[in-house]
Image (cartoon, rainbow, N blue to C red; front, side):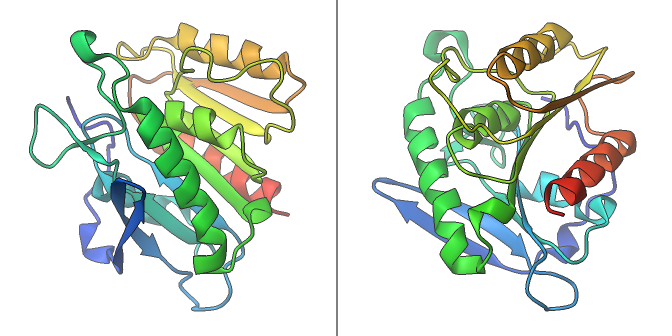
Length: 230
């Protein structure tokens, strides 16, 4: 899978790697406290896509331009079958489609809940975001937690991930490229329609882009995060 982030690798910025264990699964995450070492203005958790890893999405940090916020980038718990450094939230191969999803769902939920005590930032000031498979996990887990907002980039809905009895879904930002050949634009349209039908405030924006994250998307995401945490 080609790398979807069009930015210079910033792996030298990694400050702290930590392991989180829940039941039989564990995940490793990298965390960046605020640049001023003060109490974070908010917390942003960003989930990578299938075959990427935490370091890939951590390379986006300078482009968010949110120095007063704490960022957390977790590695998915499963190995990616096609590259040694890639990680996976669940299997997307046809013969094993969605294998591991239930376990990752519970692990990610427990992980996000644990961050309130470890960072001092309440869920009400936490944003969950993700790209591609990470965006799907953002919808799946974030829709069930009292977060400040969700940011979904080139993502999609899992089957039955959001049902009519789901209430109090956080405000949601959906960003998608019109030229995306990996996750078609129709997936974003369907997600928007589904979430809006439940009365959730949705900000939706399309970009002339493929399956990628670009600066224009990050600027929109930044503004959404700041406004959600006013």
